[in-house]
Length: 332
Ligand SMILES: [Fe+2]
Ligand SMILES: [Fe+2]
Image 1 (tube, rainbow, N blue to C red):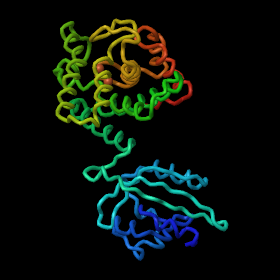
Image 2 (image 1 turned 90 degrees about the vertical axis):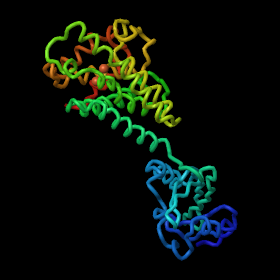
Image 3 (image 1 turned 120 degrees about the horizontal axis):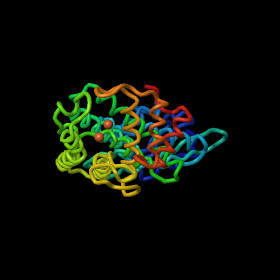
Image 4 (image 1 turned 45 degrees about the vertical axis):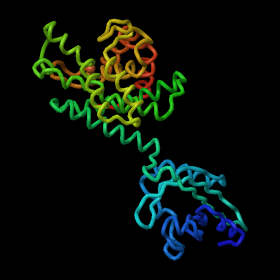
């Protein structure tokens, strides 16, 4: 190691010094006592050995991009101590160029308040929430073997559409908000688990009373998620819950106010529900169901265009059509 860097090792925080290829050149005493790794254990090894999957790929990519371009980087890492225990720390890595060689000096500060818990980055939280909601949705609607595929398609397509709509309309939604809508879309029909099978899968047309029962699925769904989330009672799901409720309750409302259950009109319908409603109808029409034959993509898109400003938010239909024009809709 270049001696110019030696003073860094005297810092009270844990310090690690690597060369340009991330090989560990030195660590200080604080580093040794916090992590349990002695000099001899890790000198000459790649810094990557300390990594855990709790630090997301994107955090690492971000860090590498910054320091390789000569800029310092700060963020949160979850590494593993020698004992196997996780170590959450806030780290600043500063690149130094000495005699034409690059060195990286990492200064760690332990996130003490996390002694009792675990640091999870947004991306990981969102992935966990997504998986949990998927399991929930599938287990509630398990009676129909086609359901799982429909739900996954709705989630994927909502992901695409909400992203496009955000971009086209300058909505400034954060990544987390966009992911929340896509994750929650999978729950839209959770209330169908409360509808008798004889009505739900009846081929042909429905009697008025049967239609009334089916149209109760948004309200039944709301009741189901309320019960589940009351049980979970965790703020990790608080925002997810509101988005999911909006989608479940309002995905059959229509832009012109003729939908159900509340006959909401226009902007009074939450945007996430207006988005899922287009996606849900598109998927339902373009795939085979017990009560109808498959429609081809052109016919389905024509239907969406006809319903622009009637059943659907015109701006959402425009965003959807822009995906179609660019050939971005998945081929079923
Ligand atoms: Fe529905
Ligand atoms: Fe659906």
